[in-house]
Structures are given as structure tokens and as C-alpha cells.
Image 1 (cartoon, rainbow, N blue to C red):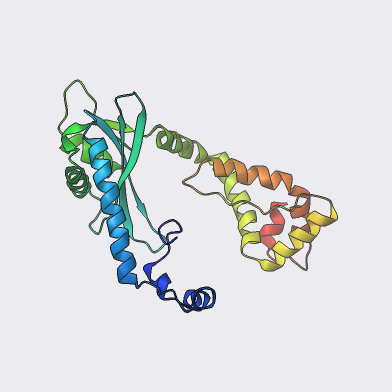
Image 2: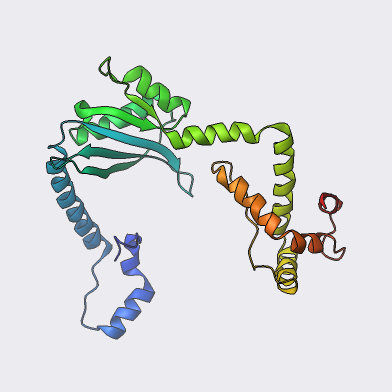
Amino acid sequence: MIAVDMLPLSFVEGPGLLQFLHTVCPDYTVPSRTVIRDRLQGLYDAVRNKLLLTLNKFPHVAITTDGWSSRSNCSFVTITVHGVDEQWNLCSFTLDTLEMLENHTATNTYNYLVKALNNWNLYEKVIAVVHDNARYIVAAIRDNWKSDDDIEMSVRCSCHSLQCSVETALKECHLKDCLQKVSAIVGHFKHSNKATTALENAQKKINLPIHRLISHSPTRWNSAYEMVERLVEQRDAVESVLLDKEITTTEKMKNYY
């Protein structure tokens, strides 16, 4: 349960769980967090050994890697490996998610990848590294990784390349101004409980779907479309709220309509 639901090890010492187990099974001895940690380590070792046997059968592999930050602003690098087995089945495994305390430079990133891949005996088998368009990871693969002259080791993610292309298009002056106005309207409702409640009442009054407005996330280009689409759907309800002087006191919001 702890592994599947990704619960903290301290869960086994929580008063709620202890009270529940004491009620349903008074004779059960709850394992400590140390016991749980050792059992999880045992599970990890067993899966790792099994995975090593599988990876050893691959003559060549490709990896995908990406850097990301947690909600607590901790930096991580995740590595996934891909290979084709003897029956021509494509197999993919997540090898590691490593916390990266150093700056995301080309050298540091390359060293992290090399260390992780060597732990799995895979470095010499890698024939392609799929990554995004961040400069540091492009330089890490291009400048440090030794590869066959006939093989392009660095493979840029097509989805991220599309994201970068659309981001550039969304910065076109007329489109940018339009999105800024729409974002301002959506932001007004996101940060005002009074306006949000009024919007729900207006939706019910004019028989519109009870949908919340959608914010645009710069890292998801399709969210700009979804934001505009939702505002168009809710235009009548949004307009009635913004034109209500008792609810909307900001002159800037009124001018948008």
C-alpha cells in the first residue's frame, strides 16, 4: 500500500492508522518505518536484479531524459531506457530519478547520465539520447558523448520542438495582446471568490454548463486554445458578471467587454 500509493514511511506511525488497526486487528504488530524501508529496499533490489538480466540481452538501447523540479523546488533528472527484445517487442523501463543538487550545466548533466548508465552497464550500448531543446542538455550530448560518425546521438523531442514553435507564434503581437486580455479576465475570476460565485449563478441562470475558466500554461501550448475556447463558451455568463458594478469594481476588467 505504501509503495503503490507513494505514501511516506512515517505513515505506519500515524495515530489514525494505529487507531484503525488497533480496532480491526488488535493483535497485529505494526511494523516500524525502518522495517518498511528495509522491505522496500528488498523489493527494489529484486526488481533491479531482474531488470539487469533483461537489459543485458539488449545489444543497443536508446534513452530519454529530462530535468524537472518538484513542488518543493527540488531539482531531479529522470532517465528512461528503451530497447527491442529477441521477439521484437519494444520494452521501456524507468531507470532512475536522481536529485540534482548542482546547476543544470552541460558537464554536470552529462556526468549524472554517465554515472547512472554505468550503474546499469548501459553506457556503451546507448546509440541515441532523446531530450528537449534546453541548451544545457543539447550541449551535454553534442559536446561530450562519443558516438559513431554515422549515427546522430542527439535526438530532440518532436513534441518539445512543436511546443517551442507554437510559443514563438503565440508571441506575435496581435495574438499576444489578445491572449493577455483573455488571461487577465480568467485571472480575475481565479483570484476572486465573489466573482467565481457570481459566475456560477450566471451559468445557472442562462443555462450554461457549470464549467470553470481555464488558465493558460506557457509550457502547454494547447492550453491557450483551451482557455479561449472555454471563455467563448462562457462569454454570456462572464459578460454579465463583469458588467455588474457590485461585483466588478476594476475599470480595466469592465473595459475588456
